[in-house]
Length: 529
Image (tube, rainbow, N blue to C red):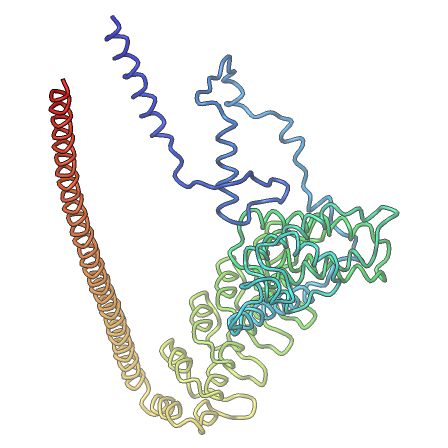
């Protein structure tokens, strides 16, 4: 019975050791987590928090009396609590920034980020890489010191922006964003200088933060936008200096980082505004409200002509697909096709002609599209019009033929003059030439694509060979290390065996001496007896 009990105890002990082995800590860290410091700044702090939460959780958790219905339906309170913050915090009309100003601001901010990234790339040594005693700024891991620096300095120095690393910058940006969100802009203690300080640091840190943003930083910027929008609502006059600072922050957080739509109660963008902005989504939104796609601006130009002048091929095609009238004329009598031919836009010309543009429409000074294309010397556009069947012997108001207007462009003049003299025979020859040229271009593109594919294959093969060579070298090094280790272990085993043999010999000698001593002692006792 005692033997069986002992066996059971040993079995339980073995099982418990096995269980402990399954839960053995892989990455051991010292210390307790610091939850008061915000999100973890490094992997060690993250592991401390994971280990702490694991210690607080029981090994086995059992849920009882669950109501499965709560997982199948969502409470109406969730929807009731959700508020359209962007609409609720929409600014009054006098506080809304101009759209053109917003676009320029976002572009300038993008250029600023590029400039900062170049400065970072050209910096050979970082201030935060060494001890804090050798730098004017704290080391990157010292969050408290950076937060203190941010609180003490109103104007963020460029040296500080360049000294911090990406993790420190993201942490400090979240810190400033939360401060902007929590600030009491309507309170009696609202300080103009404090708000300016936070907004300046927000601007500087946004110029430095690395992309893509992590979810916590995105949420931080959105919370800052919420606070800034509240602050803008607290301003009572457009003359207040804070309005410009608030609009700048919202242009950065909303226009660049896309964490806020500064629209709210604003009037929806018109089709003309949407085309000027190049936004096809806003064009569709305006059309859904019933706005006419062919509405004219003060110069008598429709959206299609505005997009053509802007060389926006995507917008032109989008408007044509939505039913824009390509035959509308402006105050001078020109159509969108006239504008496209005058500026040499082949893709726009092809799109307009495929949707029914007037090939022989008379514009200003009785110019036809072919007159304007020849005057500009745009061979591809001229060829496109000629292959569509346009006439080449029509004069404009000044009596000029297309061949006269392209006198400075020999190649174009030769094409037009041949069709004037030979008619359809020359037009057919041009069609064959264009087809052959297109085939040649297609062949060249295929050759370029094939060469590019071959280059990628070669690079992949070279990379595979390099990886294989690296693997072979690593394996050889590992084999050498293992062989050296085995040799060292064998040598140690031989030395241990030799030492054990020596100890055995010593023990034998000691035993022999002890035996002799005992024998002598026995003989001595016998003699005395």
